[in-house]
Amino acid sequence: MGIETVSMPPDNPAAIQTVELLKRRWLSKKAFEIELSRPPSFEFKAGQTILLIHQSIKRYYSLLSTPNDPNLTLCVHHLPEGQLSSVLAHAETGFQLKLTGPHGYFTFKPSSRRPVFIATGTGIAPFVSFARSGITDFALLHQAISADELYYHSYFQKITPKYFPCLSEASITESSFPNLFGGSISECIRKNLQPGSYDFYLCGEREIIREVTLLVDEIYPESRVYTEVFY
Image 1 (cartoon, rainbow, N blue to C red):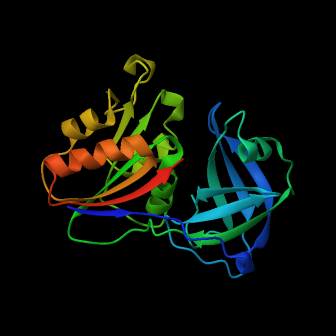
Image 2 (image 1 turned 135 degrees about the vertical axis):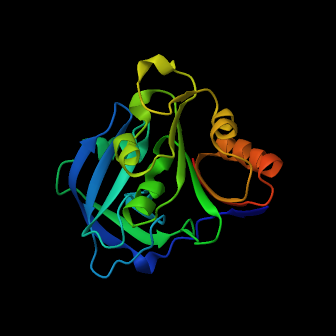
Image 3 (image 1 turned 180 degrees about the vertical axis):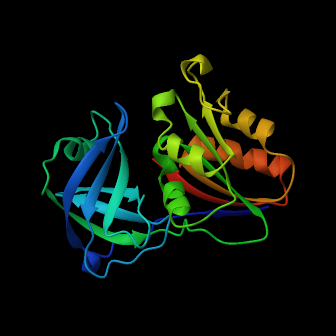
């Protein structure tokens, strides 16, 4: 099994650019989507991140956008105590921030193996970018605590029959999603993914990524794993 852990490169002050907040849309009580202006000549690949900077605060965010979109869109997990997420949750249209990027190597690598995307919470973001950029024939397993945190579920339900939402703690009776699974992400994988060789792309919480990587090593040893950790 091949494992590639994505690490972020150091900041490059020469690449700092200014962007404006264009709009914000709440996805749930815990997350929202924001659209930022795209700097001239800013190029990136689906799955990459940007580093947002406000005063002394710096945070990495995966892009929801496709490389051809006119603006940059992010999915932000709102923490009441979060320094930057709280700013972004209340900022007015036209609010300015700095950014560097693109950063990261969590990009799609075509191969003969079928891709499997596994996300927790707002870790779904790079997979939205993958799908919107034209990547098809993938399976997607998305773990959340409650149904309202299964972000972009309606989009994925329309484009792939292999979308498997997984509720880790809440009762599955709270939603009627097709293929809804109640239990851990590992149990969901065991149930819905036959033994074989795959390209696993994992994005989300460190412990979940570790859990799934061990499972892949056990059941899908000829697969390759790419990871990006959300802190």
